[in-house]
Length: 73
Image 1: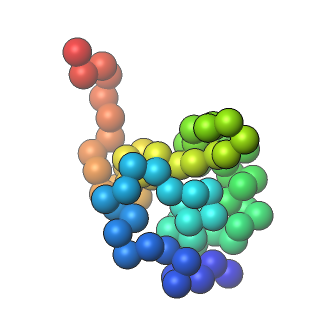
Image 2 (image 1 turned 45 degrees about the horizontal axis):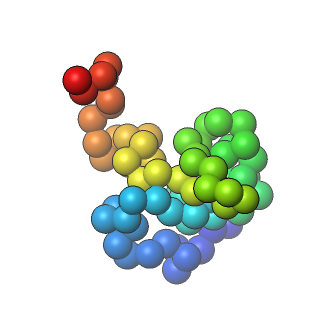
């Protein structure tokens, strides 16, 4: 069970969070979070060997931001 202590209070103002933090936000354990990230269920960005989760899509998943529609040209 994820610990709420592992979720930074200011996560919404960050650009990215780690996969374990994203998992905790979604109520997933670390292993489930990495599994969801590797299957594409949690959006990720690879930075070298590091995998991070962009906060905006995560907030959309939670219904905190409106769904993204088309190109913002």
